[in-house]
Image (tube, rainbow, N blue to C red):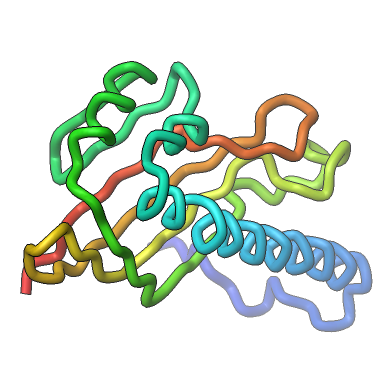
Length: 160
């Protein structure tokens, strides 16, 4: 049986490794703060207050899976979001990570090309009872801009 993880491979005295780790950790921290800002200042406020603008966060290639139902394309996403009743989201936890922290691949920008954001919270639809949900969002940065869009997301109610 091969050993895939070897503690001997980690050298605390290797300055190059420490430098790379610092840069990776800096970028992970930047991604985490950006993902949290996207969730708390854009996505859920738009969901709750002006849902007709939600489609601006998606692209023609975007896909959403909503409790097992797949929705593709801007017009279908827009129709779907407009059919949802009014909401009030309460975010309990957010975790955001860059999908790639390959420094050479992304050296033209401090920001990673892709982010994955995990959200857990509660949502109330009109007069219905409050439901818990999980929401996984894959964000991508378009071209050489610092603007992120939702490539795909998966929303799922969590049953008690």
